[in-house]
Length: 330
Image (tube, one colour):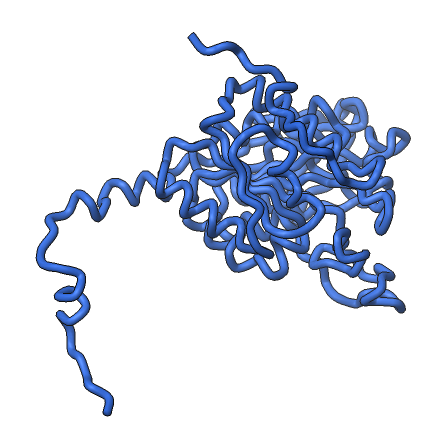
């Protein structure tokens, strides 16, 4: 019988080279703890990353790993999953790596429902290349590439994932030990593509960008923790979300006096997920937890149902290439 592994068993001997105080440290701790809690094994676990601060992750996990090229981690992970469907594959990316140069690859791994876990560290900036604004940066973000403030409309990672056809979407906060841990375990248990957006603090180039809802003095009023089958309430249960049929949107109501109007979270409801993912503070609280989960056949299951090696081989590769029309160019 194999020994039960601890978080320390998943911690490599590599020197962690992030800025002191970076939110990535907390995420690393949460991931190694989650791996131990779900009973993962080092020989069956693979971390794949692209380029960026978050993409140093494979060095710090005692497992197999690939530090690939900018934005292409989903493509590499797809190949790995098809080569060995039994592998437990995690993709670590950032808002720049995953949603800019890698947006196309991220879209397809989600729509195909490849059985990998995608962790997108969102700090709304390019940290590794010295603080340029990223696809998720808010209008007005001042950076080396936008000295007078960005005027672009930002991407919402969760809404992007939903639009791409993701079957699992969740959110967590880097320093939220319990909440992030629960999300990671849920993502691990999903058979298709799991997409987890993690609000991560870059203390050098975009410090406290999420402080308005992450800070302790604001958390109760500006966060809503969603749980399947439970009322959508926040502010210590005093406020809730209700549907406004006149505007086809949600509104905040007194969760005690108007308890019958408070919505109940249904993680299989894509319309509700779209509403929760689009909510922005201070008008509405930021939704955290498993926002959408709908079981569906994974890409690798469909692939192996008609695997090429199960088909009868006829002829050679050369014959196959010459089977259709050919031309000679002089």
